[in-house]
Length: 414
Image (cartoon, rainbow, N blue to C red; front, side, top):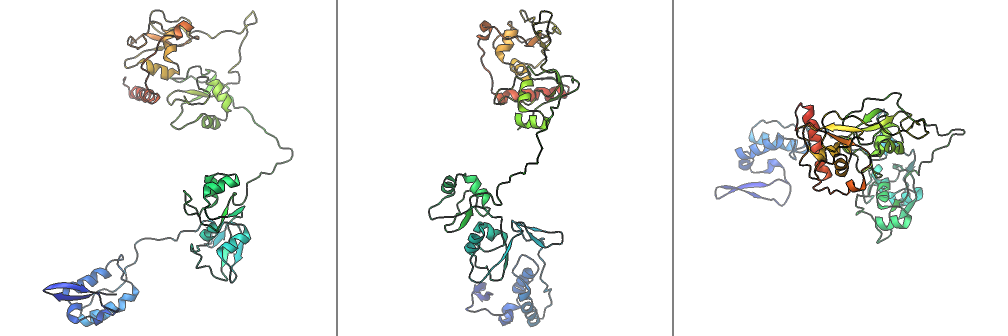
């Protein structure tokens, strides 16, 4: 419907007529005015107006009345709009739709969406989705060919039901009910009474066929030679290792062991600093992911007993009282502090103090150029009782550790 423009007290006024009429029926003074013609040109020139093929002839007639000649073509829509494919239907290489279930039915007179769903053990909502049927099924037509979804164990929703109550009654969970029924939204607020829904996986649960005579064939992946240990390496990690890995953000022990093709139990065994829940896996520390086959082998001395670990010589001057029975040393550089050392070597502050008794509990006398023991024998009960205060959060330690290595890689010391 067009608005009739009139001049009242020198201003244009718009009045809605009581019927639809053509442009040419407007008074010539209004139709051919500069402002009205400019408005019509603006409407015709954009694809975003309601100017379409039904308006073209009227516009031509109006121009003939006014003695003007302007373009009358309909502007094409500027976007390439592709119709969304319904779920459960794919397009073959020749462009024809393919029903994933491979089952089609023809609608007969008097059938309803729920009736078809009940007869074929499918969810009504999924049936609608994959066949582009309206929510009220008002466009379901006799003779139409419908693609059936995969069948499932169905349940007819009763008044008052919720996805939680249905899941509880059927021995499953809320998320499963939603995943079985793609027509349901994520909070299941559009569950409708008297409609079929799936309460088991559509298509059933996959059961693999066992091949006669087949068995489990696994082989441990061991390194044939050791690699030079990178730094810093987690405390206690075996040096009989051919490959090391430093965790990335989000890594878990299960993911690392799977990617390295070793068992989780072997991964934690060759990296004993990792706790039982793998909660202290630290980005920045290196862990062994491919040990040699003899990583846990022990040799016997002349008396038949197992040999002990070999101690290492200090690479430089050490603080007074530092343990001679030390397996690994670290020489402090400018910017180091105790918690950076404990994080880098996967040890506690109590252990660091026990192996380096001259070190104060607050780390205020950590000396640049001095070598400190970072892997030694178990601390005595007396040493372990020394108080450790001011330990920062795990996140703060990790940030400091990352910053330290960024600085060193850049040729600077923090």
